[in-house]
Each structure stands twice: as structure tokens, then as C-alpha cells.
Image 1 (spheres, rainbow, N blue to C red):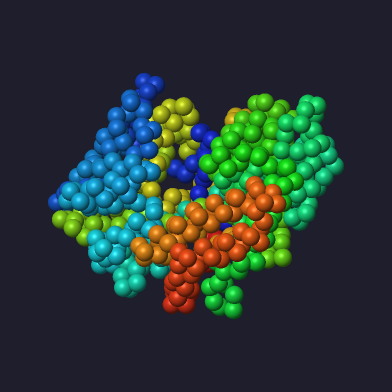
Image 2: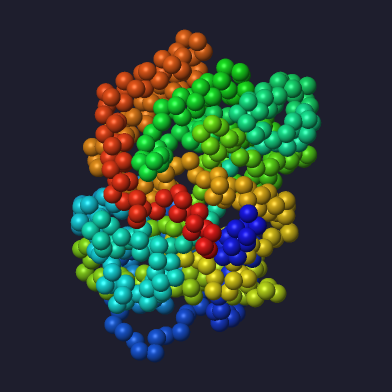
Length: 546
């Protein structure tokens, strides 16, 4: 595991434990400042000026642009791009979590942007199937030397960006491997109750029961509980049992035994009284998070936890101690839940673009190392200055948050791996409360969760799953919701609706709505694409090679 961690860490991009952590650097000319930041430095002009193109480019709007900075489409960084890039860019704001609706409106009105930046694989696949995208092979070869070099270094990007017709339509990036969803447990409670971190399902139930019944916080009240089935807590039980499609004898299959085991364990947790009885009303897991951070929950499944997670817990529970834990091994194996996709496709070009050459030149400029560093780290001696390693450290974290923190989607297509390897190694800002302890917890989490011997429970990362045809997508969505409702019913119904009854009803439902067609489609897709598809096993091989 040591060699694996070294390979992974050496090329991991600097992740900010909080504002102000060391990050990879750029060498922009120094600017004078009277204490407040000025406009970004203008880059050197091309020796042979070319005719400038004019394009439109989509840009996510997360609603977090400070008023003093302008708007997401008109601020110091969009101006810098237009001053230094090869084309005049009109940025088109797209609400981050309503992007499909906005894009559909733009297409319907004939205003689709030349460059479409969109994380959702399904929507990009939809545009491809509707013949709304340009193949990029020749454009990249002729106008994108930076991306051409990226394809040579990471040929897997070409493989993933290529559609069924054999042509490349998508541009993507390599990002640091990172655990997205991890399980954390109160180790101070374990110590008080003389219990080990659970390694089996029975031990998990035992610990959860002790956290519920034995007053682990010592306040003399029965006001704590062991586990939450809300939101990701429910998925973690599915992951524990490998309850998903999986490969057996080189075929893609499902196993009702895995589903039954997962449902049975959820029901067991509920019947034993170790979970929040009202978990079904906690749709997004916010109550579970609040309960954990306020010291009322012992085992919590967290999404993208950072140093603030520990700091908030300590604010009301000074002696609290936590550690990551894997969900226990079952007869079906041992699995992890989710990780950030290390290979993300982000960008496509509209088939109706009037100047695709300019679009490709601009994209190549946007992913250039000098560009993404400027956008990510700002201006030297205003936002950052080099430390002893030659990597820039934020001068004023608060200023950086205001003047840079809102622009992350401007470099969403860039592979932010520094050419200076030392700057890719995370450095802890010791001035941040709990930062050193959190760094140790984070490294322990990665050791546990980025182990190929304990893989993701899914066939691949969601962003690499094939997109179902519209009719099957509706069937699959109906199945997902209705089966979830049936499972929830048996979990909370005691003896009035047993697991066996639920499994029989689920089988009938699957036949009734035609969900077997979906599995057949996926099985056929796997048979036809197993040599080229980017699957879970490939994620770990890729991480090891990095």
C-alpha cells in the first residue's frame, strides 16, 4: 500500500485544506498594490498576431460572485481572458444545477454557445445523439497543441472522449484522486465504551446499539443514536453488500441476494432502534450531518468532508475524536462508496459553431498551465507569493476568497497538475485550527478508500456509465423511485410488511414496468464495450500509474 500511496500522492494536485493552503504557482510580473487587488497582469503578446475570432462559451453560475466583483460573466477574470486569449469571448451564464433547462432554451432559440462546458455525461450524450456536436479530432490536431500534448500524456482521455462512431467529441481533464464519500466514527465514544471499530455487520450493529443506549456523551440522557439511514447512510448499506450490477463470469448481472441482504440489514438497524426513526424525512442528510456535528450521532456517512467538519464538531464537543472507517465486509465482499472521478469529460463544441477554429484555440488557451494557474491562484504579490519551495502561498486568505474563490468553473476543463512536482504535494497551513489533525485523518481516509483491493461497489463511476435510451431511462427512473419506496416501507413497518413480502413485490414491480429491459440493455452494452469501457478496475489502475 505504501508504494501505491506514494505514486498517488506525488502527482496529486494541491487540494486546499482551507483558504490559504500552499498551491501550485505561476510567474506573472509583479504589480503594485495599495492593499487591495488590481486587475490581473496582462500576459505577453504573441510574436505573430493572428486574426481574432469571436465565440460564445458557457459558464456555470453558482450564485456566489461577490457584488464588488461584478457578475459571473463580467469580472476581473473574464476580462483577463479576453485581454490575453486568442478570441473575443462572450460568456453565457448557465445556472449550475439547472444547466440542462438553460441549455435546452439556448438551443431552442438558436443561441447555443460555441463551447459548451457541462459536467453531466448524460446531457453531453444526448447532444451527441441529436447530432449537435462537432467531432474534435482534426480541430485538436490543428489548433490545440496543449490538448494534443495532454492526449499524448494521458491517452485514456481520447478513449473516454470518443463516441460510438469512432470520433472524439469531448475534451476532458485529469484531476487528483479524492475520496468523495467516507464513513466517520466517534473514536472517543468507542474508547469510553471499550469497543473497537466494527469490522463485521454484527459488530456494526453492536457499536450502533451501544452508541444509542450506553450514554456515550456522558450527559446522563438517552439522546444519542448510532447510525443514520438518511441519504448517503442508506447508500452505504447498499455499498456494504455490493447491491448493484456487477461482473460475474464476464457477464454483467444483478443478484437479488445482495439486494435482500441490504434491505434486511437496513430493517435490522431500524428494528433495533439504533437509527433516527424519522430518517425518511431527512431527504438530503442535513439533519444527520447536524446531529453528528452537534454530538448526537456516532457513525456518519459524509460527503466531501473538510477541515471545517472537524472544527465544527469540536466547537461544541471539545474532546471529540473521529476516524474514518470502511463499511464492514460481508459475504459479497468489501467495497467503498464514491470517489471523485479522476478523469472528467467537461467540454464539447456546438455543431452550429460559426468559428470552430476560434473555439478550439480558445479552449486550448483556457487549459494552458499559465492560464489555469492565473485563474486559480491570482496575481503575484497581491493574492500569492512564493514560499520556500517555490510554490505560492495565499497572502490574504480573505482577499483570495473574495476575489478568486468564485471563478473555479473558468478552469473546469484544465488538468491542474503542476509541472513542478513539489508543488503538487499538499502542504498543511498550521495556522488553521485542526488543520494538522485533519491532514492525518484525510491521509488515513485515502489509505482506506483508495485501495484497489476494496473497490467502488458500482460498475464504474457514474460519469462513465453509458446513457440509457429515453424510454429505458424513464423505466429506470420509475424503478429507482418505486423500489426505494417499497424498501423504505419494509424497513419501517416492523412485522406488518416483511422483507420477503417486499422482495416478492419488487420482483413483480420489475416485471410490470419492464426494468428487466434496462438490465438487458446494460448487459449488451457491456458485452460490446468491455474492451474499451472505463470501468472501476481501470480507475484503480489509472491511479496506480499516476
